[in-house]
Image (cartoon, rainbow, N blue to C red; front, top):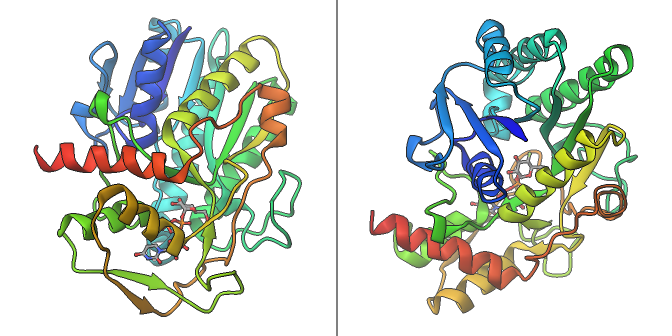
Length: 327
Ligand code: UFG
């Protein structure tokens, strides 16, 4: 396949590029490098520096590179920032994606599209594990914008025959350190890289956001899924769509939840270092527990997370931290 990867210089996107190249597909990356990193784009891929909201540019790429499928990763991703600066999210995630979709709709042979969605479309769940039919009640502009794009895909699919898959990631984690790829967010807000920074001595302590949640150890539970498993899921979704499979939304998780304290203990085991923690008030908008029901992706896409051991996920993220520290 010839695949256009928007946001291919970012965390999940760069792992997808590596996965596509390893499977001998042709890859064109479209990234404005506002948060992504040029050196994260695999050497075999073509990097086009530009805006996914530039319909003419995307149309030219679809036509000139004879693109079969698009993986759309480029987006704003910080829940808290979306609350304080929602316009960045409505513009960046919705307006730009609709502009990209204009080019997709107008292409002579419209490419299949795989969209990075999120568990944040569900909001606080009525029950866990969460299946795809669970009511959608996003609690942040971030989640609202991802859901808005899903809705656009549904209606464009119905009216114009666009083939699409929305992949709702739970908590992306891990790295492919051997390939020089990992998480490099500025600023970093995600749990595992923060705990690893504490182990590394780059931060004094981890503030645990709430220790009186209704969970066995009082801390929040999340479903951490390896970024290489996410990339495999995108590849499975691409194959599914290109073969004429039905469009739809899929949860991507392991089906297993881990608490913040379990993550801290995993980091201590993997690094052999003690992690200092402090107790902080709950973070606004955090649900107590988010765990995916993963049967649909397995049944329809034939995908299941394989790298599910928390210690192994943390070990991969640690290998990346050590490598990044050495420059
Ligand atoms: N946490 C802490 N201290 C920290 C950072 C995080 O206790 O310094 C806790 C959070 O409260 C949460 C857990 O660790 O319980 C995981 O937090 P992350 O920030 O790593 O991830 P989130 O679950 O908040 O967010 C993830 C994705 C978002 C997505 C969301 C879906 O990063 O993009 O899941 O709800 F929107």
